[in-house]
Length: 89
Image 1: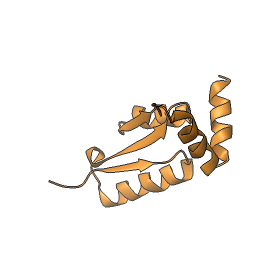
Image 2: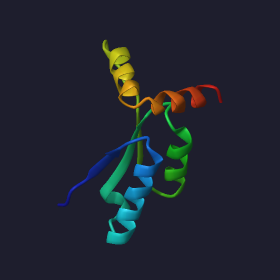
Image 3: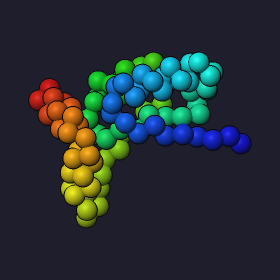
Image 4: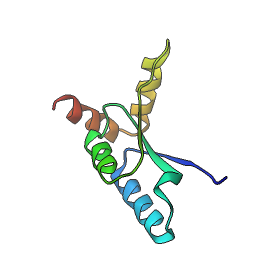
């Protein structure tokens, strides 16, 4: 059966560490995916997808979508910079 892993980050350094990890250990690309918020690091999302990695982009929804989205952005102030850059494109 195996294990499927979701790597949820917008941090490029963490992504690169994971890519090195999977290369060194021969982890199949179908065993994991990268997960990111819509509108944050679209450049990284596209690059990973173009390299054949699974990328799940998610959008908060429902009655509490705004507080959730704000919490996620506040967890890491750099996310605000990523969001602003992507909104201005």
